[in-house]
Each structure stands twice: as structure tokens, then as C-alpha cells.
Image 1 (tube, rainbow, N blue to C red):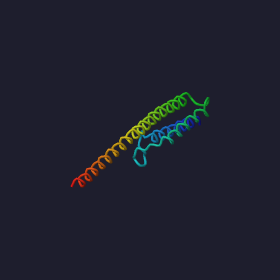
Image 2: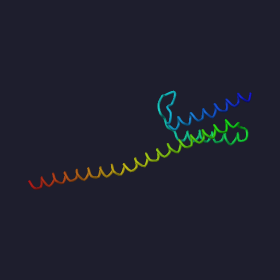
Image 3: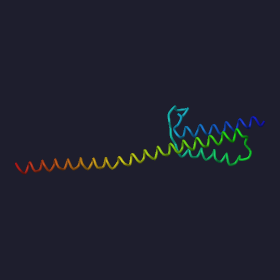
Image 4: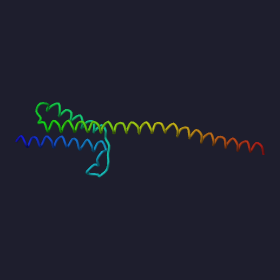
Length: 125
């Protein structure tokens, strides 16, 4: 029975690892075939893995402990990578917004200048 439970435990943590990598957008959703990102859900999956580590401390074989530690490390590193990408993306979007606003002001100024010029033309005639 111990061999069976070892295999079940490893399968359980590998399932959470796969789900987390999918939630991070590192692998495609097997059902849709699309890359999907949900960092909140990925964080939840990592939290579950960390809870499993905490609750099973002292009860795992060396292989199980090493596998769980490795999975937690890899998912956390990938989470940080995706979190930083999202942060940079938002910063880039925000830095581009004022430029677009400035472009709009320039267009308005140009339009107003043309309107004034047309009015001036009418008054000169």
C-alpha cells in the first residue's frame, strides 16, 4: 500500500504543478489548445502545494520531499517571471497613454489652427 500512496501523492503534486503552469500561460490548455493566464489562480495552486508540504512534513519519503520542493521552487520562479512580465506590460501601457493624449491635443491644436485660419481668410475677403 505504501507504494500506491507514494504514487498517488506524486500524481497529486504533479497535477497541481501542471495546472499551475497552465494558469501561468507556460503551457496550453489541453481542452482549448490556447495559452491562458490567470495569475490569481496560479498563486492559489502554489499555495496548495505549500500547504501540502506543511501538512505532510515528516511523513514524506526523500523522493516525495525532493519532488515537492522542486515543484514548489519551479512554480514560484515561473510565477515571479509572469508577474514581472504583467507588471512591465501594464507600465508600458500606462506610459503610452499620456503620449496618445498629447497626440490628441496636438490634433486639436492643429484643427483649431485651421479653423482660425479659415475664419481669418473669411474676414480678409
